[in-house]
Image (cartoon, rainbow, N blue to C red):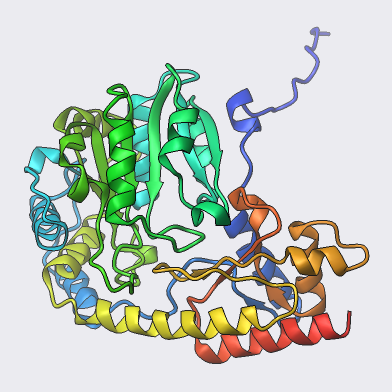
Length: 403
């Protein structure tokens, strides 16, 4: 009888073992499961516009299919889409790029991950202002880097300050992530704030800056939208501006993100993508080209509706005892502190437990602020109808009244 080696457990790598599933996706999945089990659940957990993709964009995709545009596309984007992206950067941001300075990926998320894989060596540090998008820290870990969380709060309007930035920088700092309008806070840096951050960044030439501007067009402040390079053009040789079509054009499922940046970094990103997903879907690229090149009226219409929902949610949440919701200038999230509610409720010790309690007692799914690096807060997406939002507020108020 042959000697049989003992079975070896199938374990993931150490790098993957430390990664947590996306909190927003987990909440959305839990809501779906409860609905399937017959529960009446309203989800405010997922950052997905409730609008349909505009018809002219869908028509461009159908035309591409009928024209046989179904072959492998270039790894870093079709010529037509790159031209549309270059025109968009010039039109909307007054930034000039050449085709070799543009990359296209399967969503802005992949573009950011490709960038991290392209530039991070083991234990290189990535500065992440908190509150942050839930995926940032784990993406850094997967790319071999070390996330350095820079906690902000109400005293700094939930934005990183020059003093915070200077204190966090070390000889191992390699990447800074700036997200505006922010997910989850909706906060946007002013021209003066970018200028002061830029003065610190000029002193650290090894640091690459990634501007995650995916919510650029969901913005309603009186002043024009600015990205870092509009204020600090001298940083262009090490700044990557990341964007996409998911949020502005209600194209989340089409999976198209893009970036403009220095050619050496774009070349490195192209290498990463060539060995992972290859190019983004050719049909989606045709649709994204139509989105960027076509009428932008649909973008303005959706933005205006998000703004109305924001104004409703801001007042409604602040009218709840123990809740404080700060004002913001964009994105489609409210990010209030529920600490006053947590402090007065028996058996509830933190935002995670409170979200579980709301799911069970109010039938409302929300994401705890701890997942964004901000304990005591809860993120509520208002990328759903006003009727649904009003029902959610009524459920939250009713559950708290009966607690």
